[in-house]
Length: 111
Image 1 (tube, helix red, strand yellow):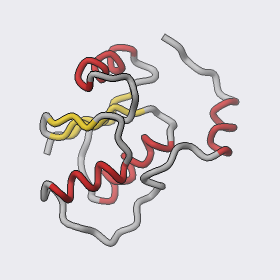
Image 2: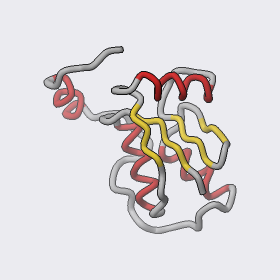
Image 3: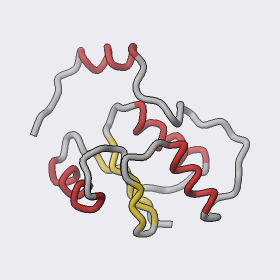
Image 4: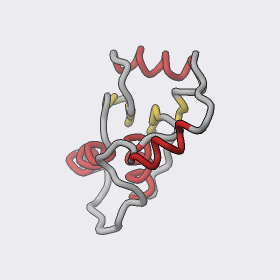
């Protein structure tokens, strides 16, 4: 499988996608859309919208998707077998208040 995940470095939704990739031991390209404008522009061009995460699996773009939805897609298309393993992070949630507070203390990079 060729997987490209257009993700934010620190984001509950992005971490949910990463958790699903880890749960199934899937190799994927983690593409930073915050610190690299060209990556963000590529995501928008390919997905037709500006929201993230977006995950491209073998040429199929899953736009504005949660880790839970990625897992459902993988299972429904027989790309993985069901696993009882627990993901390393919540797969259907944004950042917690604590995560937002930690991020607020860091400098933000704008294009």
